[in-house]
Amino acid sequence: VIQNTQNEVYYMMYVNEYNYNYNSKRCIQLRTSDLNQTLKTAVYNLTWNKYDRWCKRIEEQVTWISQVAAIKQNNYYQENILRFWYPKAMDCGSRTADGSYNLVHYSNYQCDSGLQDPTYFFHDEEYYDSYVVFSEPSCYILRTLERSGVCEFWLNEILLNKTLTELEAQQQEESDKDKNTEDCITENNAEVKLNLQLFRNLPRNCRVAFLLSCGDPETQIYDKMKCEKVIK
Image (cartoon, rainbow, N blue to C red):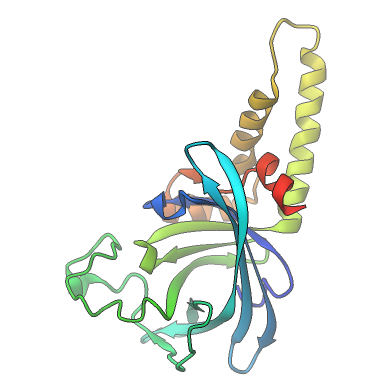
């Protein structure tokens, strides 16, 4: 994931389970730079816009810049966890993790952060870990333990733009056919239809991995109409 996001932007498209963590965020994008192949670290740039969910309005932009490292879950054969240090937090060199699913010791089988051991999240103000469920250049899927095991679907910006362009062209053709009918196609209707079709047109591997690991998409974080207005 770190290598794929090197100087390329990925957008968070959907989240499942405990999505209240994202109620006040939209247009979330991530890229990395200054990749260190030996240490398997990089500088990450995480940007999002505050979101007023009551007024459905996207507001000012927030940016986090700090370090991310690929680390191994204990007794695991390859790096399968991304450790994101919070801005201004010191990297104390911690490179071990129990893993996002290793919670049975705390009688917690549903990946909830409300563990019985109150010291488990002593590092909360330093970093958070995301378990890599699936990864390929076009997309990746993460489960973030400190956010109660929320499931995140991230998509490459180039592929996102290509998919949206194809869908908009398809919608335009359908709209032209409907001009002679009595159906009323409003801008809002078109936007809703576009969002519904988007997931179905994403790469099959990404969709299947998300469905198997997380279920049907619950909350769409990226909205083309709203995000383009603030990102440009």
